[in-house]
Length: 196
Image (cartoon, rainbow, N blue to C red; front, top):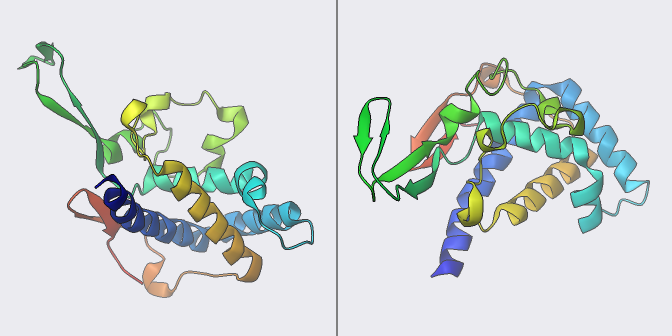
């Protein structure tokens, strides 16, 4: 059963995240060019893109992926926790055992945690800005010991695919895609509101 969940949950969400990254780089050609230069530097003329290059050398691309996942998370509501005991929050009493869902999209777009939250800014995730927001405010794969089991695989797949694409292609958005990308929801998974 867990293997089935890994393949089914990992396929749609990773593909959706990849679509959002492609959209982001098409919308921001200056960022696409910066990613391309980083990829060229990481490859060093060899054209060989191995695990080490993907996970260690493509830092800026990692920032781009994270910023994309922040603004357009493939999963809207991911974290579910159960209250251990009764508690009160903003005048409402919750009984122990109540399931609490964390609204990923709203948290990751909240101006209390991210200044100008709808601005696409990969530098939010740079080493220099490491303490720029609470760790729990960025949760595209959930948080804690029960976070997404496939998160590292998804990040490697997305980073590798985008690196290969920028190595060989430049792309731009068509006229119908230049506006902001609305999100639609299918169950708990987001999809681009305007397909290609």
